[in-house]
Amino acid sequence: KQEVTQIPAALSVPEGENLVLNCSFTDSAIYNLQWFRQDPGKGLTSLLLIQSSQREQTSGRLNASLDKSSGRSTLYIAASQPGDSATYLCAAPDTGTASKLTFGTGTRLQVTL
Amino acid sequence: DTGVSQNPRHKITKRGQNVTFRCDPISEHNRLYWYRQTLGQGPEFLTYFQNEAQLEKSRLLSDRFSAERPKGSFSTLEIQRTEQGDSAMYLCASSWDRARRELFFGEGSRLTVL
Image (cartoon, rainbow over all chains, first blue to last red; front, side, top):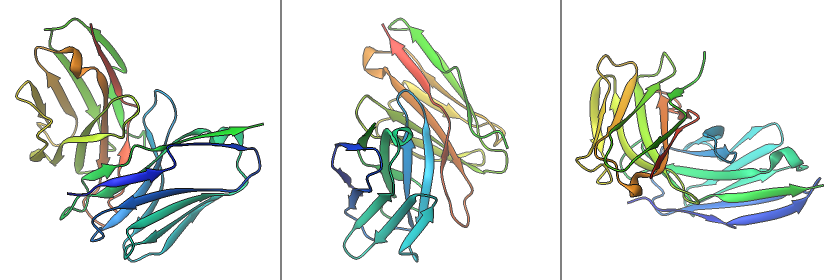
């Protein structure tokens, strides 16, 4: 059964800093891995999806990496802004499936002025 | 493309009442998923459909819960005889079953059981 862990649980940084969020998963035979953003009381917004054949994926100031052999993924946010404040969730497919996702509990990010 | 739509966004009900949530997926997506999320936790899988077929149900989905996707388009999630422990955000997502298989979520339906 897939298990996903995210560290740290919460993070506060001043505006402009670069930061890294960490995600680890137990079953490395994954089809892909997704990172999501969630604002309070809202649904999930897909940020990046990395296919198993890829090592990283970039979108604007966001870069996600995937190391299947070690069961780790990182989300790098460059030049953080107050608007980046949200909870960031990592999700990996369950063992033997390509779509049913297991989520971590998220990293709550606050970017201060 | 209007994204995944969920209704109602908020529902407050008394214990013992039945509630129903509706999800309209992205039109070209053939897979539809229901997740539940409680405060401070990540979403937990409940069930998913490919077209109109319900392919998997979580053990979290007790017999008070039922989900349907009758024509392979929208889906409903019904909770009968609600309990206070059912209070949560119910999230719907959709995807295509080929290529990237990226999941897209709706805004969720928040249930409060008094």
